[in-house]
Image (cartoon, rainbow, N blue to C red; front, side):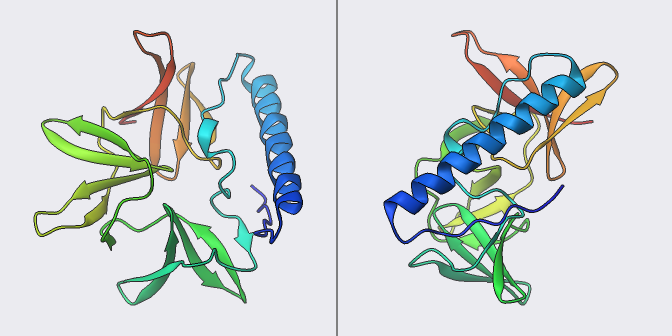
Length: 187
């Protein structure tokens, strides 16, 4: 997959052009996926479509990004998005399992799996810590979420369609209310 270069625009007009370009790219990717799989693919991106794609490079960090150190590596964090410094740019990154944060990103999805609470935002699962704060954890099998960030792959296995984001596989399900959702499965 090629990397998409995204810059945080200093003005609304530039930001709107970036959003339009991202949305057009998402539509083209979904159309290509439809042709490859010969079935209707419902875009799991939804409300994350304005967020930068995982793997994208940005020239500057969002204002007020916090530095979070994990195993001697600095990650920059802002509103549920993690960045790593690379060659005078920043790459939108998957956070490592075990990284800890004081606060959750805005509007996370609340989940309860096997009696344990989890929070989900932008492809990342958080578990509350007894001492306070939250830790990034592996996706719990059975978790159901309404959207995935851009950067997933559509995978065909045994005639079934799955969405792979990082090392996590999701299958499409239809909830009782008729909404399409994505359930974490073990492959």
